[in-house]
Length: 100
Image 1 (cartoon, rainbow, N blue to C red):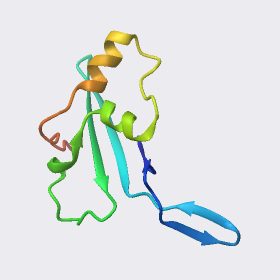
Image 2 (image 1 turned 90 degrees about the vertical axis):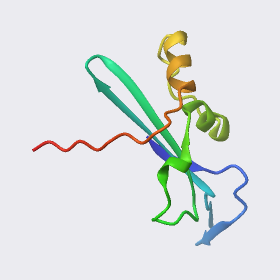
Image 3 (image 1 turned 90 degrees about the horizontal axis):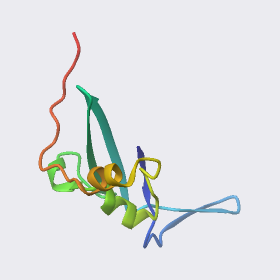
């Protein structure tokens, strides 16, 4: 799941009478299921982030993203599952596994 964080966005692009806010940050939520276990990794990345930045510096919980966006991501899950998944914050990036 990917999207903009528009809170505090004052910069806008104006074209043909339309005004679109420029996000200061973006979020990305990765969800993975393996061996009947679900894991979530979430990041908030500032717009001006350099491509060489260490992505570990941007790890967040889903709850932090919800607070910044006003969105509710896992509302259809039972409350106990939602709480566990949304408050978990991974401390490292997942390894990439490529199928041969």
